[in-house]
Length: 541
Image (cartoon, rainbow, N blue to C red; front, side, top):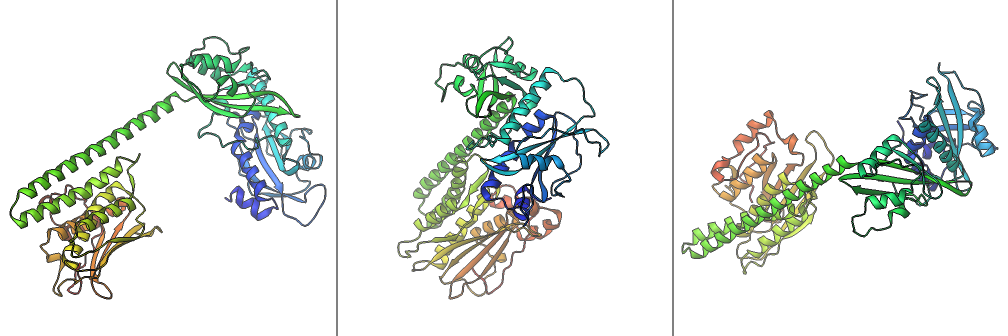
């Protein structure tokens, strides 16, 4: 089904400013449908060369059904085009620029439907007409609540026809703004309650107001109920006076109430206001629970980072006491591996979710690798491209693998010599059979590897770790090759959707290329992953 924007741009001459106004209207017209107990259908003139007092054709660009009553049109009418004269009240409303309520109920669909038309204006410009259709099959004597709804709907319809609703310059509504059925309060010009629905009365009782709201100044009693001694951004008595459209949340006696004030201005005169209210206590309780859990998770990551840094410090102390060069080198490598994991947990401790901007982590890992290069080498690693945002389950093994590849390039390819070391990243967002992927290349212009090098038979612990992490843990692909112009190039290609990287078909492929994780001390492995590790004699790290 085409969107409102598509229909306006394809079939009408309305401007972008007109389109914004219609979007604001449609985003809030559920309120009018519920107060009217009626379906709403928005018609705008079809683009045409003919000129006259009435457009030659109309196109329906939006439709809304009520939640407070039966619908008059169960079928979708958006996109339908009708010629002038087929829906006479629309033509009259456009020509005379007034709300049209004349006419007997229609029986075309087998049920009695009362039709009304409301002109839609932005300032002095006519944009379209709202057709309001009420299903009369269950008509009965209206209650006081229904009469209040209908009177409020009539006032809002008049504001729409005068170009006063939606309110120009009003900020977008809060997510899950109160609806009519949640609770409605009608105020007079002085901000005094003239009617409160049963749900609104119940909501205020939970706030601590035991008596009837009718006759009370809503702003004053709300201020008294929520007086905690803390300063407010603005006095609630002003916010709830009905003078301006505002949304606010109040809390008292353990209950949280969401309030939305809609001023009613008819004929240039403020006649009162509608206040919609909704008890959001349970929602806010859940939000606070989630915030508490998020804070707990961040604190755990912070403590893990601190513990890893403590382990790294202990390893450094132990390395200084060793007199065997091989032992000191092994401990130094362990410090770097622990440090790369600590960087990830430090980043996770600062984010509210398990998603990480990996560019910052990559830069820190690259900087850490450059700092440990020998003074004679004078190699400054750099990064090109962007890793983007990665989930924590990808970031941790990727950071460790990147550390190993950089260290391997510095120690073997660029040992005691000048050179360049570059890390490039490229995301492939278009999801195909394998989903979005990330390609990372680590390239240097060093000496390369011997011609008989085979990564699968290599006894290097660092390369075994990289194979385990990339192929076995992330279900990715690892390729070694010669860099054009000399040196070594390593390609790491991993799926970003790790749920798709697991499965029975990938289990056997990954097992052969994956060393025992227990032997490497890297924790759990994933049963799955696309394992296309390739090692050829002409490839190197």
